[in-house]
Length: 379
Ligand SMILES: C[S@@+](CC[C@H](N)C(=O)[O-])C[C@H]1O[C@@H](n2cnc3c(N)ncnc32)[C@H](O)[C@@H]1O
Image (tube, rainbow, N blue to C red; front, side, top):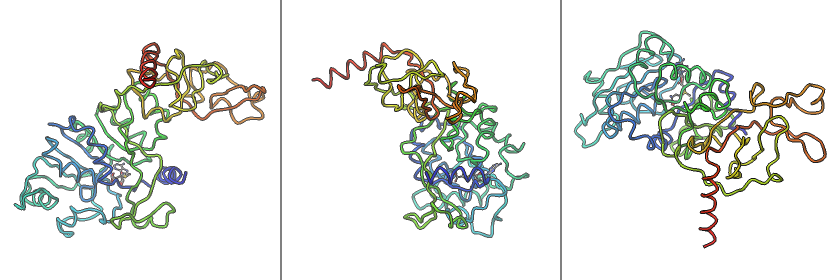
């Protein structure tokens, strides 16, 4: 998929300059409203002059009942001042571009008296020093002492962090015991640093309905293949594999997946190298199977920890493996130790894509749910 490869290229190139659209932030964050009352929010990869995360929180400061909003940015951020607002309304000369800033907001009100709150009010509150806008001492790296002190002060971190540092970014949040809502590549769910957190229910996928697909890019990226101009005339790149990650409770996480299929041994082959059955589509998870099931990674988007336990990931080191192939055994295949393997009727081996192993916590209950569904549809 073009989108995926361009995102991978972003990580590989250390090219992290993709900016989130306000509409995408609004669509996800409406599912977390109750979490924001009376808290300090930190956006620590966000130029207060440019970031739509900063804009979202500052303009919804009172509606959400925030206590404080802090935004910091990184020194090398090359944003060209093309998307937002605060830089323009502050007057370009007041602040030097390419300097890392810290914005701290504790009050937002209608300073200009025009009957509403907008970025002009926000700018006025900085100018009058009712809110704070100062240069950082260091480079604004989220790992710097100065930024970690701000992290410790925060209750919830919300941002789109650099893709190339995603593992490290999450590790810092977990180490500092922070709640967060962040954007990342869905492939990160498979990282050896991230999957255990998902398995242990320390991180999960956000609502992602819809997941963000278009991101603003600086104008010098315009030669990239997946770039277009959006309805507002801004350059956007499309990505096919981006999603929200969080450790805040959301309704979706408690929704029980309705399972309508029953286990039949003919329909669900057992792997040769795991004591588990192959379920190639999430919608085909049988309601009555008690053992381990290998399901596609996309399952994580619907995981309800009350319904299923996540038991592992079919990578090379998976402890659930019951057979390790020698090179001679898989001479005619790709490395079979990296996947789930099915022996077909003709004796040949078939490998699957990477699978997540899950176990139904209440297979009998699922049967009842299924029975109810069947009887409802028969009526
Ligand atoms: C994917 S962009 C998203 C920017 C912004 N959060 C948004 O959503 O529009 C990631 C941002 O992280 C910044 N960044 C890169 N390395 C960083 C670091 N070590 N510490 C803090 N920010 C960093 C980049 O300059 C870039 O602006």
